[in-house]
Length: 448
Ligand SMILES: *[C@@H]1O[C@H](CO)[C@@H](O)[C@H](O)[C@H]1NC(C)=O
Ligand SMILES: *[C@@H]1O[C@H](CO)[C@@H](O)[C@H](O)[C@H]1NC(C)=O
Ligand SMILES: *[C@@H]1O[C@H](CO)[C@@H](O)[C@H](O)[C@H]1NC(C)=O
Image (cartoon, rainbow, N blue to C red):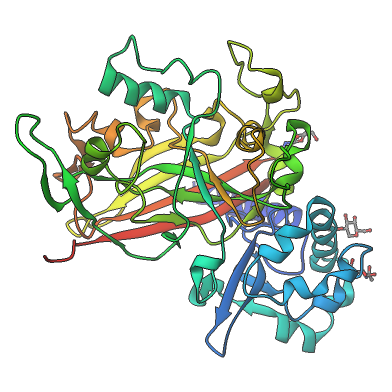
C-alpha cells in the first residue's frame, strides 16, 4: 500500500516534471495554471515602487517585461520606426499603429522571451532593468494620471441572446422577449468613458431617482438594486475616417485585444429612467475592466464556429471566418459577512450571438469614426443554463428569488462591502491564456 502511494506520488511528480518541461517555452518560469503564459503575452501599463513612471509592460508568469527599457530591441521593418510607442504612459499610440505593427511586436516578444534566445536571457544588466518580479505587488494602471484621456469612447452592446431573452421575458413577457430589431442588428448604446476604471478601484453605491411603487411619485436615494454585469470588451486599434465605414472583412484588423469587464448597473434607477432613450445614470457611475489586454493573436487558437444566425443578417454584417471564442468566465462574490468568495456564475464568451467583427462593422457602417483606445463591450454574457446567467437581475429573476451563497448567506442584489471578482481563461493543448481578474468592492452611498 505504501509502495503504491510512493509510486503514485513519484508518478505525479514525473507528470508534473514533464508538464513543466513541455511548458518551458520561455526562460522566465511560468506555472501551468498561470493566466499569463508564453502563449499569452498581454499588454498593460504599470509603475513600480522605485519608479512611479507609468509605462508599458508585458505580463509573463509572475513578472512584467518593461518595454520602455528595451525599445531599441524592436528592430523589425515597422517597429524600428516606432520604438517610441513603448515609452508612453498609455497603450493608445501602439494601438494606433495597426495590425502589422501588433503582429511584428508579438513575434519580437516571443523571440526575446524564448528559452532559445540569448539577447535578454544572458544579459544580466538588461534583465535586471527590464524584468519586474511579482507584478501583483506592484501598482499597475491601464490609465495615466488623467485616466480620462487614456481610453476614448466606450460603447456597450447587448449581444447575448440568452441575456436579452431573459431580460425581455421579465419586463415584456415571453412572446415579446426579443424586440423585432434584435436578430437583425447588434443593439448597443454609447456609454461613458470617464467612469471606466481599472480593477481594484472601489465602486460607490450611486444615489438617484427611482420609482419603486408605480402608484406613487418617484423617490430619491441610494440604489437598492445595485447589480453586476459579466462582460468582455475589446480595444479598437487603427482608425477610420469620419464618413468611411470599416468593412466587415477588415474588422479584425481593428481589434487590438480583449479585457474582462464589469458593467455595474443600478436596476432601480435604470428601470425608471430608460424610456425612451436607453441607459443613462443607472450605468455611468462606474465600469471596471481588467488591467491586462490580451492580444487577439493569443486568442485565435481558441476560436470556434460562429453561431448560426437566422434570419440571415444583411450583407454588411456577413462574414464566413470563425470569430467566436471559447473563453471560460466566472463571477465570484465575497460579502463582509462571508468567510470566502463564492462562485455565482460560470459562463462562456462563446454564447455571444453577434461577433466582435459584426459589432465593429455595424458601429461604423453609418460613417461613425472609431479611434485607437475606444472600448467596445459585449453586453452581459449569459448562457442557456441558470448558473451561466451573467447578472444578479437574472440570477435572482428580478429579485423574485434569492441567490444562495451557502453558510446561511444570500443576496438578491449587492450589499455594501460586497467584493465582486470576474476571471476568465482559455485552455487547450496544454496551454492556457487567461485574463487575470476584474475586481471591485461596493462602498456605501454618500450621505446626503
Ligand atoms: C528551442 O530550440 C530547440 C532546439 O532547436 C527546439 O526544439 C525548441 O522548439 C526551441 N524552443 C522554442 C521555444 O523556440
Ligand atoms: C533574439 O531575438 C531578437 C528579436 O527578434 C533577434 O533580433 C535576435 O537575433 C535573436 N537572437 C538569437 C540569438 O536568436
Ligand atoms: C490544438 O491542436 C490542434 C491540432 O494541432 C489545432 O487544430 C487546434 O487549433 C489546437 N487548439 C488549441 C485550443 O490550441
